[in-house]
Image 1 (cartoon, one colour):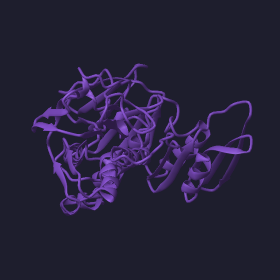
Image 2 (image 1 turned 180 degrees about the vertical axis):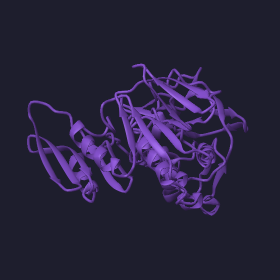
Image 3 (image 1 turned 45 degrees about the horizontal axis):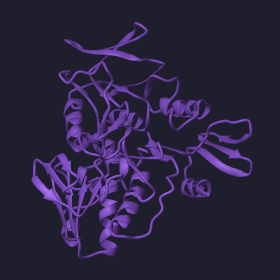
Image 4 (image 1 turned 30 degrees about the horizontal axis):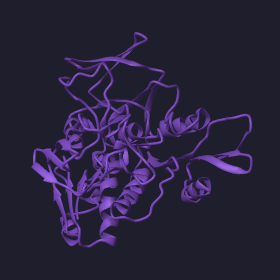
Length: 375
């Protein structure tokens, strides 16, 4: 059997790993648009900080692919798929497949004001983008981070560790609006402020312009700030443009079922490019789980994906932060709070069942709570 995997991230490599654990005979070819072996994308901020060499965040080196008899084609892109004849087309020419996994990931989303010709304005998703950020940071004193999400906070602190004056600009009134409620976000903000991070909340960036003295970031309320460089961390969009003209069903991502199948025979999807029951998880743990299930399904194993428990665990400025499950409030939701010095824990229950948790300062119970919430 000839298996092709589009992508070389956590979903793609998780699929390849489980396939090889059960099937040593099928041909596996992986296609990557980057020129790198598999690395921990969430750790790119450590690389930017200057405290971690890129080699330290590599997960699979060349020897791993050779040992597992996996062909990795790097620096190549897919342009289209002939789903009827099961052929891929792209910068590599053409490749036929028996089973195809699309794990093409996502790319940074850019706000309407963004223009490609802007200098010293970046996004962070790849090693190449990290290299550009490092090169500019070496000659800069200040930075503005547009977006107070997981990546925005990590990127901001990486630049603080380089000695830069760094400000996070967030449209909402608190940090991590997808992962924290306002109370827990206020705790985190105070702790991060002690680490020399600065914040502007409730600010919608209207424009960025290159001036002689650096960048001017103008906001919708008429105010503005100056910075030597800016990094946009405003979410991601699925890499699915090559599916245009095919019958593969898509919404925000590629629509998948409980076996990670698309609506087209022999095509599966997993990770940041996929959408399951209207949900797009966008986190490492979910992509890993989806990749493993897709790999098993592709070789005929019996699987039943029920969705992933939404959770995130980061270390921001040395502060452990975790968010798991659902912390929305309903009339029947009960809340339990523990707060002592730099440790904050908040538990959300619906009846007797734990449905969500927020942890700051101590995340040692993360996996235990994740399992309990999953039920």
